[in-house]
Image 1: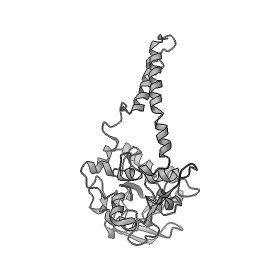
Image 2 (image 1 turned 90 degrees about the vertical axis):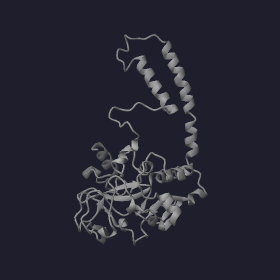
Image 3 (image 1 turned 45 degrees about the vertical axis):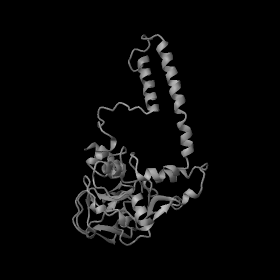
Image 4 (image 1 turned 120 degrees about the vertical axis):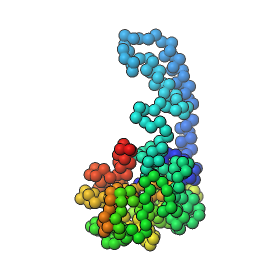
Length: 323
């Protein structure tokens, strides 16, 4: 499964920022930017001294002024100056769309926790604070997720879902609606013992990680990475497999064939580094809750995105385009 995080800073960002084993390399790359700025300034000076060859560069896009504009844009990016916004881009920050939907709004903002908290909404406790409050196993009890008040946040009651034998072939047990669930119903958080980086690196069929943690774990594949005691630190990835009681979202199954994609009625959302399933349509009592794990989970099956466009990012991007 995929874990995604907002581009805004969060407690997870600050806790994990120093842990990335490739940070020294990234800092080295960052030192190149001043040299690019100097080179750009020199290039602009040379271009200004040249005569305008209007008989060759007949269009504005190909003119020296157009080239100067491109160089200036590169310099603006290098020194962090704000770029001009596209005509169809919101005038506010990327995560402003969170005020319409807590589940995020495409690749620009996939975790609304920080933004909504700063706007005064009552958000669930994030995974870092919950971990500090209740430990690596009991952190889920500290989230206060049912008391949250956010745009389109509709938490289900515990008795509104139940675990029974799955309708999907070979899936074992599954999670079902015990009552009529509306579109947008938020299921209990996906819980389990939190893992260290060393544990998360080994993977697991019930493991889920926030994006920042996935980035660090991905860096571990680089043979030049310096390994050390930091691998024993918390990654904030969770393994739901051992937590079989009081963890109903553990039993949400995913479509593994095109035929099963027709049963998908649940999407994956993240807030505060915690994963929550949310219904994408009304679900009748007795219906199984089925999701799409995306393109990296099932061997030999890409995902339902090609069939039903139910992949997480596909849904987020289509939802923001419709807002």
